[in-house]
Length: 256
Image (cartoon, rainbow, N blue to C red; front, side, top):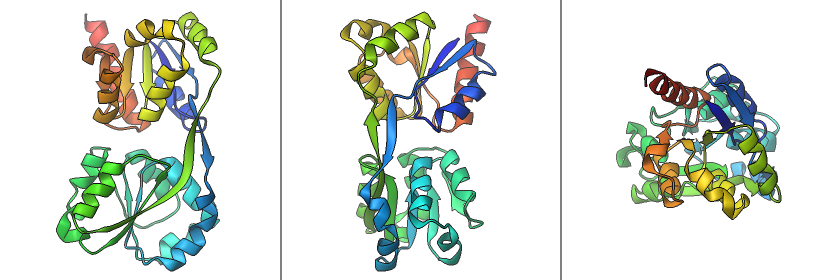
């Protein structure tokens, strides 16, 4: 199995190293780049002005930019704010900065988070909740919490910018590397792949095996023309979840 990891710089390296333990080869090509927004500088003032009951971090990048904005993690220790992470890798990163309990669902999606007892109406009604995220995304999470009578605000601390102008080069490189499995952990990455590669690459792309981090990404993949049988949902964006999915694919091929 020849695998393409499309995660941004800073996150794809560890995943690639882990996948190399089971794959024939792994190629890491960041498809998007992560940059901070102006909101990072406003974090200390927002923290003082808002009476926050719960912080929900949607990614490791959200944690990184949050810590950078405050220059210190001590406020997490001294506050009574509940800490929530959508996925295990995000929770692990958050735990590096606090000894407080970090709640994380087994199903690493918005739906999995919303199913937690601590996310039900009786628990969140009247609460002030801040979702720490990048620009755009996770609308379902905010809408569901608002329907449960919570006050929801966004702190959008980073933005995803597509790496442009390299699509033709990527296509040649990926074909040369015999890539037959592509890992995507966000809708933004998936759509950027299809937007940046030349039209002649579409048939090649839709014939690859795809490992996605959620059903939401899988649905987008199907909308782009990828057959359902080619899409494998890791049910999470953690390195361990992706590794388990890839291992399962390889084992099934070996049995055949």
